[in-house]
Image (cartoon, rainbow, N blue to C red; front, side, top):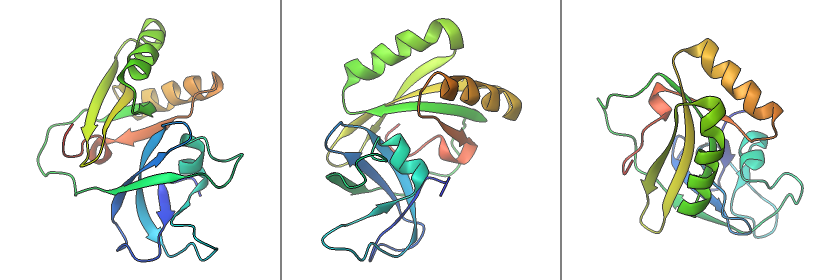
Length: 160
């Protein structure tokens, strides 16, 4: 429920997919860890955490685009921790959020992620350790932002 996971009828467990809410352009990477949905013509069931990031908790069912991602490359250097505050298809929206957060959080940056169909702009706040990442996430969540804590192996995917 609180992990970035989803259920799909046929994709292999462990597959990572980019899911984009077509109503608002928000996007998130999730890992397939369950089977479903088995209701009507739905194609994916999102965990609560993923649905919150995509702003689909209220509506429940929204149109989405799903893109299968390749596995992350091995051996890339990465910061230990970061908090992802947003993933956008609009570069301007990502840069505006970066500008807004920088005075309070300092090390705010935008990464790009290219899939076959789309470029995503992800806004992140770098943290020096586990305690700092938790503090940053709590502060951002209290301010109303959807947050996703990323550890070293989740920070980089092909195209970043």
